[in-house]
Each structure stands twice: as structure tokens, then as C-alpha cells.
Length: 266
Image (cartoon, rainbow, N blue to C red):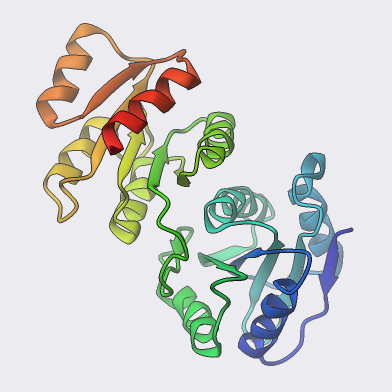
């Protein structure tokens, strides 16, 4: 059942207690999304929780509003950081459609083996102040609990992002989704991923710019795979000239994609 907590004072302390309580049972992971907003009523909080629970995907989602800070917080029991970041894209759209988002957003993920400390939760809440307006900042102040290969997936198609997030997640990858080039590059800078999968046709920055900037960044050794509708000979040649490791044309075979990723990361 969706739960909406009433706002209380002490956002950091409350989140610290709620996340640690959530991680006791039955959940082993918990994601958190925070957003700077205008005032928001209880009806909208319930509506947001219900919308994020589309098709029963997030049955335990909790939403609260902090009046003193103007901050809306989404608590996501059972979700990893990658899944939380994907859900944040939907939460951002909901807030923007309601004309409520006035600042940035931040996301974090905690697990049973890597629970939040009071300092980590305070850093997460403070992290929101440093995020750019309407952008999603990823807090990763705590080391990742696992050594799963990290993949940043950049594509404007939300359905494809969701499909690959689930499919590659089952193969042991930690997938960070982004729907435009600017957000994708910010994830690359934040997470230093092992591999990037990108479409060529993207809002903000296109796939060619993504490859070029990665090859000229501190994370230049990151493998870049192009997954695109634009895979004509000229496009393929340009991708390889810029430094792409592989080019795959849509529609694609998921098994072939997984095999190529495995080859690149071994």
C-alpha cells in the first residue's frame, strides 16, 4: 500500500530513521529521491505515490513534504540506486507537469549491507542544494557495496531504458539510465562507469559529442557502445573514428547485446 508520511521537523534525522527501519525487513535496499518544490497539498502527494506505483511496480513508495525546507521526498523500499534514478525521471515529470519543481533533485540508494550513517544522510540532504535547477544529481558519497560492472545507458526512449535496466540488471550490471546527453555525461562524471551505451540522436548533446567528450575526459578508458537507429555506413565509420568500441543497430537482439558487453568488459 502507498504511504504518505506527514511532514515533521528534522528531515535528516527522520530520513535516517526511516531508511534504517526500512532496511530491517523485508527490504534489503532502499532508494531516496529529494526535490526542491513549491508548496504541495496532501492530495497531490497521494496522487504522486499512486502514479509512481503504476502497474504495481513500486507498491511501497512513500511520499512526504517538508514545509520548512520546501522539499518533497520519495522513499522507495526495495529499489537500488539505478532503479531509483530511473524512477526519479518519472517523479521529475510529475513535479514539472504540476509546475511545482523550483530547484534541483537528488537521488541516493542504500542497502542492508551498506546502510546510511547520520553523516551520509545529512550529506545527501545537503547535496540537494548543489544540484542544478531541474537536473537530477546522484549522491554516491558511500562506496558501492558491490563490484558489479556499472553501465550508463543514454537513450530518449523511456521504455527501452526500463527494459535494459531490468534485463541488464538481471545479468549483474548496475545500470544508470539517462534520457539526454547532458544528464548522461553528468552520470559518467559522477560514477566513472565501466561502459556507456548511447543512442546517436539525443536531446541536449548527441551521441557523437558523448563519445568525443568521454575520450577527452579522465574516464577516457571507459568503453562506449553505440545502440542506434542511425547505423548507416557513414555513421558507423564516424563512431569508430571518434573512439566507440562497438556499434549495434536497432532493432537489436538482447542476447547479442549482452554477449558484446560481456566481451568488452572481460
